[in-house]
Every structure is written in structure tokens, then in C-alpha cells.
Length: 434
Image 1 (tube, rainbow, N blue to C red):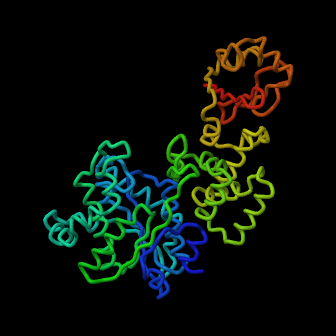
Image 2 (image 1 turned 45 degrees about the vertical axis):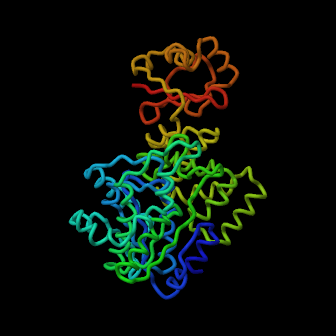
Image 3 (image 1 turned 90 degrees about the vertical axis):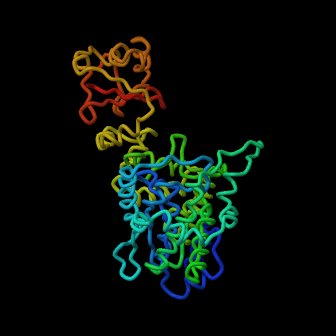
């Protein structure tokens, strides 16, 4: 299956320039996608774009990932309603290194002729003078051509209520010229013939093909994937807590896994094609199996497993599965003990957390005292309430049922300092003994 066919059945193809399919069929084609280092990590919205490069390489072509050290200093107006804050060079360098490390997880840099490559546009822009850029690049495109781009028109036109938008600075207006020159530079120096990206990049990408035609008389091509959106039409890649990042320091493997696990059936059926490399037959089998028993969430589990392993590791995936079992009452003390501290804290983020001193903990008369007085009434408001629920079998500590309100407080502390208290079926508390 060629690249166009692969992207089409996966629902990832939005548009491409005439001649693109013939170019890809003519032999190995070098194609690139640019990533702006506005953060030290990419998120799952970016991952959909990375998958375009993955499929390009799998189809026998050469992928180039451009980390925009120069364009990151400006900010792309595409899809934005306001100008982005400019970043200093030190922050940009740190962000570039983080993004490079993530790209290396998905692309093969030792594949021979079509090995992946990473470039940084700051390398060719750092010596470019303002006057030199105007003479060598700016004169080739008219203002009318640049104003016709949707990314520009939307920012300078009135919004739906008739108010003026925030407008577009000259800095952002020049972004399409700079991205266009990237394409020209890579065309001349790396033999790049194709630029890809999300559908909102179409205007910037075609500016590059036009520059190549006007400066060099050459022919280059554009291909864009569908912008991945959620079922409500909003941009994909965010949860209520913000972006879902690829860096475990920003989004824990447990939260990452849970994000995919909690997708709707409609989203899972669409996104398993976008974010995994599972073959068509396997995806169709999983989809049919899911339809027979939707409550088993076969699609969500297959998607969550595949993406969590590729972004993080199999170890992180297995730990996330174990952690998920805890909240559904299936994990035991050994499961809890097996969780690393960061995973444990991630699982119980958002539940009430209580600190008690080591001295007070060791001197506590019984478990009912621990769960009422010592925790400041946060678990139980009174000792009597604690005793009643314990006698009814509704309390457990570290997944072990508390059998008596007078039970001695000698529970094994998780990671040497934590107790997980469960009251009823859904109420959890995390006690930290310091």
C-alpha cells in the first residue's frame, strides 16, 4: 500500500497538491514536517503529525523533522486568535533538545538510504540579515498573495460578533515567508520535494512550493493530514487539565494511559487508525469485537496499550494497568506495593491527602482514632461514625479490609510513608506519614 492509500484508509488524509502521488510513485522522496519548539515536549496533537512522517518512512521515503529554532522565535499565526509570547534563546534551546529526544522514539535514524534526519532552521537563519532576506526572499511574493492566506485573513477580519480581532503583527505576518524559505532551503540543500503537516498548515506549505517555483523554477509538493478533533469539534490533544504531553514529567504515564482509555467509542474507532500502526485487518477485527461488547472497551484498551508503550514503555504501560485496577477494586496490597512513588501519587492525585506525624501515627491507640481524630475529621467526622462503618465492613487500608475499630495501627507504609484508605466503594484518601 502506498503512502496516499495508507493515509486515506486511516482517515488521516486531508489534501495534497496535484502531482504529489506521481512524485511519491517515482521513487524515494524526501519529505519534511516542521515542529516549533514552543515547549520542551510535544503533545498528542503533535503526535498525529509525527505519524505522517512515520508512514512516509514506512512507505520507503526519507523523513526530515525540522525543529524550528528560528520560527519558534516568531510564532505561527495559523489557528491562533492572539499573538504568541516570544521565547528567549535559552528556553528555545532547551525545548529543541526535548523535542529531538521525543522524535527519536518514533522515527528510524538508522534505516540506510531513507534514515530519518533532524534539522534546525536556526542553522541557516542565524547569519541571514534583514536586508538580505528582503532582497533574496521577500521580493518574490506579493503582499496580495500573502494576504490571501486563511491564517492571515482570519486574524485581521472581523469576528462573528462584528468586533475587530486582535490583529496580526508584522512579525507573525512574515512567518509564512520564513517557513516558505525553509522549504526552499531544504529543496536546494537536502533534495526535499515534499512538505507535510496538519490541514491548518496548508497556506504556509504552499507558500514554500510557490517560492521554489518563483526563485528556482522548481517543482515541489504539499500534503496535509486532517486536523484531529474531538467529537465535539474542539482541537484534540487536551483534557480538562490541559495538554496531554508526551513527556512523563508533564503528563504521567498513568494519566496518559487513562486519557486513551476514557475516549468515547466514536473517538476510539477513529483514533486507533491515526495513532497506532496496527494493520487494517487487525483494526477491523477489534472494531467488530468492540461492537459486540462495547462495555469491555476493546478499542480503547488496544489504543491505550499501543500508544502508551510507544510513547513511554511496556513497563510504564503495565504499571498504569495495575494502577487502574486499584481504583476499580481489583488490585491488592502487592499491587499497591509494586507502584513507584510517582505512579502512586499520580493515581491518587485529586483525592483528599492528609499528613500526620510519625510520632502521632505510632502512638495512635486504634484505627478508629487514626481515621477520625488524627486525620482532623477528613475521613470520618467522629470516632463513632468510623466504628460503625468499620463494623459494617466498609473500610479498607492498603486494599486490606479493616476488621475491628480497635485494630492496632501497624500497617505497612507504602514507599515507607503512605497509606491508602478506602471508605465505601468510591471514596479514597491518601495519608502521608512524615
